[in-house]
Length: 115
Image (tube, rainbow, N blue to C red; front, side):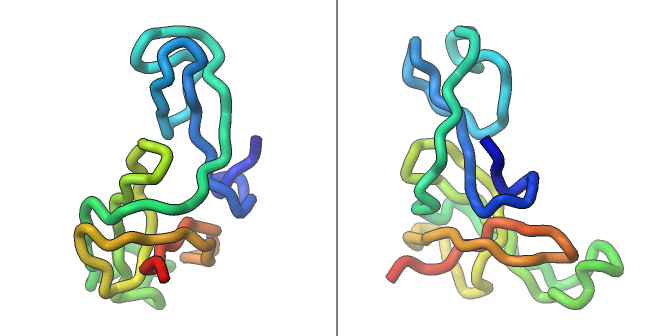
């Protein structure tokens, strides 16, 4: 299943049929119980801000046009944590939804306050 890392507008995670654990980083086995072949699923994009960091100095020439930009950690509705970009005024605990945006020539998840 394609996701944002390959240019598709989707967030994909894995779920273990044996123990029910979820994991964001793709593996050929469950990181909790070791069962083979976890099932890939598409995430809803809903979540809660766990942490936020406003970047005010460009790390590369490609990111200079985006300064300031916000890097966020999101606890997703499905139960895994992921990093993405977000609105600059997001705060810990805010409910958010993902859309996708271009950042330095790449498609990235971009989180906005839920309405």
